[in-house]
Length: 104
Figure 1 (tube, rainbow, N blue to C red):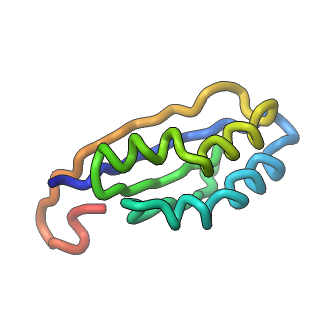
Figure 2 (cartoon, helix red, strand yellow; figure 1 turned 135 degrees about the horizontal axis):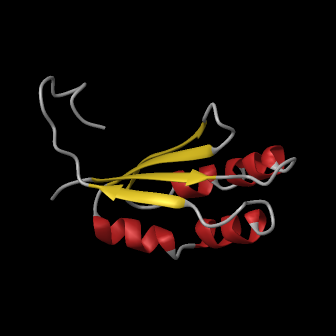
């Protein structure tokens, strides 16, 4: 079984970034408690976007997360705060080199 890594880039509307950030922070603990969540971390990008870096035990558990209660709460909370849908990329790691540094 291979882990699944996800990046999700969100573009808050002008003047709404702090509200969007708070909405994400409000669901982090719930997502962290979900089965299969290995990493779910919010990051600031220099261009003002908010980026979630995620790592899941399997595609099936990621799929369950995507329809779970924390994500439903997040979608409701960020409604009207973002320019549009997130840019999401789902990846399968290709570990190489140092086993610790060569994969997320």
